[in-house]
Length: 35
Image (cartoon, rainbow, N blue to C red; front, side, top):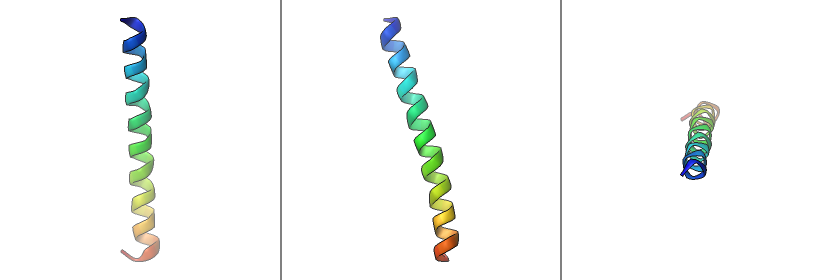
């Protein structure tokens, strides 16, 4: 059970990091491209 929980938390951390980076890149991309 502990391994499953760790894997789940790791997956959530990765998803959150990717989502944040994706949002930041998206905002910058819109500003650079003019919208």
